[in-house]
Length: 308
Ligand code: NVA
Image (tube, rainbow, N blue to C red; front, side, top):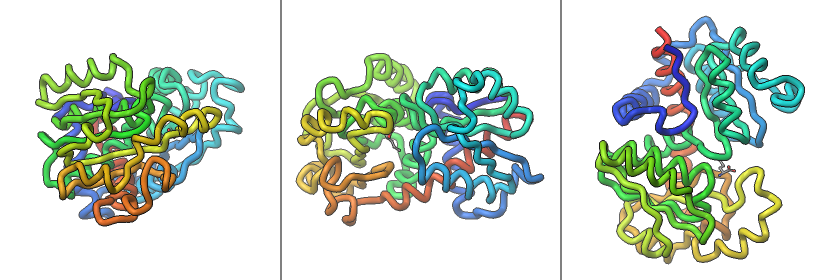
């Protein structure tokens, strides 16, 4: 069966654990596993800006023995010059897998339904599941376990990262608290899904309005830009309300003394995170950025396995 990775809960709890274990193994032995030997081509398409995602997928695909093929989303004009379905059918004949960063989750789902090869979400407006695999890998490395840990996500909870944290965190058996200003928390459907997953894993997903309360006793503190890609027009309105959710040293002090701080980057120091926090001893953001490569190698390899 052809499996895709379009949102965090496409992996069951057992599958997520398997992919994270594979990622740790690949990190320890980066050049030992070559499931894309041939080389097989993986198409990468970016309709939004990228640094880490393009670099880590390109490096990771090469390490897996494959060939990363960059398809210029602007030139291709997906959904404008050609329909998503036609692009999917064409790329599916050239590439073993398709990695796509785009706006609408529905477009990604359409790509997956026509491609005939695995499609991987490299960020949409709604989810950023590859980032979450990297985040969970990073937490596993620093804390040794995931189940039972408490994570506090602060800031724009309504963005892709807030949604993905609820789903992936609950899948890992973590307790995820999301805290943001009114109107910037995930939709009720996301909390409902986290509850459903949590019933199986022991994890949970809750909204906590007060940022200090959200961080109190947490093992992991996470934030993300207040102005996600595509929301640039709302920058000043957002900056006017997000101040209390800025991850300052004072806020981090409310978490456990050995809490770690994550940020998927790019970071805006002095806005969603203080420079002394992101550049301080509790920050693990560079491990997190590196782990994109290991985590993505694992999901690509795991999806390749599902086809055989
Ligand atoms: N929420 C951010 C994540 C960046 C990796 C965005 O969508 O721009």
